[in-house]
Length: 187
Image 1 (cartoon, rainbow, N blue to C red):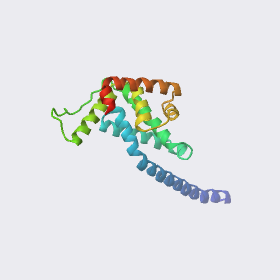
Image 2 (cartoon, rainbow, N blue to C red; image 1 turned 135 degrees about the horizontal axis):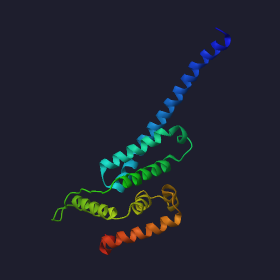
Image 3 (spheres, rainbow, N blue to C red; image 1 turned 180 degrees about the vertical axis):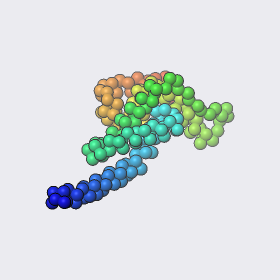
Image 4 (tube, rainbow, N blue to C red; image 1 turned 90 degrees about the vertical axis):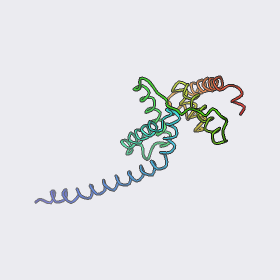
């Protein structure tokens, strides 16, 4: 065997070991990101679709898409903003695929209840009102007012201008006020 062949053979295992080590580090970084981001992504997905099972599926899809490009985005991107953008794209794609959306909810009790029951009733009322908004308006309200992001951040996540976010947010909030009534807004 020539010296050149021996050098090539001895360098191959080191390169392979380095590659495995890099992959293990990337996997650890991704696992830490998943642990930190999953609750936030799932909550946002639920607010968008009102179905915990679908929210979990959308969260998993988001994480799978991010894992496939983790080597590229892991060190350079704002991971929270990137994950929200991927999630919103998944929500919009899912909505396009579904021809009809069925929302299942329990009947509200007829009698006034305890504070916990009143909080549940308030939650159901808000979720129903939120579900009447068009998908993009709902995304703007959730990102802007639930997750408390700036107008500029919401515009970046959704890929629209700042003025679009401001205008659609104003219209969506006006629609929610109309649906819920003035007495509801004072509570």
